[in-house]
Amino acid sequence: MSARALFRTVWLATLLLVPVLAGAAESPSAPTFYRDVLPLLQSHCQECHHEGGPNISGMKAPMSLVDYRDTRPWAKSIRKVVADREMPPWGASWETSHGIANRRALAPDQIDTILRWVDQGAVAGNPDDAPPKKTFDDGSWLIGEPDLVVTMPEPLVVGDDVADWQPYVTFKLTPEQLSEPRWIKVAEYKPNCDIIHHLTATIVPPPDEDGNPREPFFLGGIATGSEPREYPAGFGRLLHPGSEIVLSLHYNKEPGPGTGIENQVTMGIKFYEPDEEVRYELKQTRIGRFFDFEIPPGHGNWKIGGAMEIPQWALLTSFSPHMHYRGKDMKYTAFYPDGTSEVLIDVDRYDFEWQIAYILEEPRLMPPGTRIEVEAHMNNSAEREREFPEIDSSRPVGWGLLSTDEMMHGFITWSPIDEDEARNWGGQSR
Ligand code: HEC
Image (cartoon, rainbow, N blue to C red; front, side, top):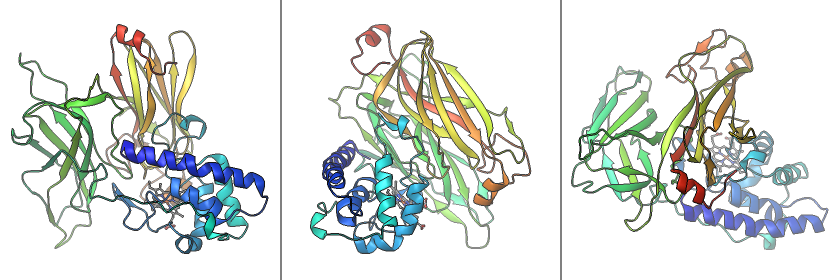
């Protein structure tokens, strides 16, 4: 979501909730659609649930929840998904979602309003109570019009016999595409086919003037339910002319005659304006376990942990938990050098289909020696297998690339800063 869209959402939410809460306090009668529920659908659901809504890396809402006629038939399902916290898609606990810029969660009292509305007859109420209709701008890019659009120069042939294939495609930015370094604000990918299961992009910059290598970095990708998100203001990644783009692609389809395709992925990038100040270069680091874990067969709550010590002053900007079908929850805790500790985020309802990055409203200052611990639980039980028949809960499972294998990666993005800057950091510190 763009900063403008986010602002609009937050603004609408604030503006619309005030009369709702006031109304609820005045009248003990059943919640109505127009007065109590529609404002919540506008602030928490319609962004996806409207005609022509977004396709978020393969996830497209199946119905519109814009007016009473659209919504009423879904009342029972809405009750279920809201009570189970399946919708809106958001894995972090309400308590640890404060301070997260892209928060989608409903507050406990908002959940309660929706449940009471359904339980008390899902009535329409008075249309005059309705807030103004919300409008959406559905461009072909979720990020808005990109500054740079690059398509794989050669089509990749995915043969008829391919069922599961993970090729790499590498190409270089041409001088026409980029002639001077620019700070990246956000990137988005278009698969241009429906058999890409996921995709990640790595940018490999050319060496600097003295021939020293520059560090490659990840630049997002496509993973079910993941959304392109702008870096916080002042933070970015520098794209150098002549950089190599390495796409790691994962195709998955039924093999058979006529199922092959030729595919060219497109990436769109938005840059900071040249006069905008970007002070902090972001890094992504994986905290967690690689290769060396095994979840026993049938175990419903297997704990896996990992940790990292931050070597220098740093600003922390986001968390991206990544597990596969068996992932249940992941909690990040900071242990500070002064002996205190704090839960940074508790993703207590992880959902593999929604790969969400939790982005801090205000980057957090971390002193050198801060230890970040990540603790996750995995469910390799028959119950999980009923939910995801792809997995086999009668076998132990370890790290692997396939979704039926497991991963336990607690990604963070952060930016090292020098001590003077840390001392002068005006934003939130612990
Ligand atoms: C970020 C996009 C997004 C938001 C926000 C969102 N949804 Fe959804 N919703 C989806 C998608 C995609 C699906 C279909 C896939 C799935 O079930 O996960 C879905 C499915 C559903 C379903 C199940 C439909 C079925 O076929 O059974 C219901 C009910 C629902 N959403 C209600 C809501 C409500 C109520 C809200 C707000 C409180 C909401 N959603 C917010 C994207 C969203």
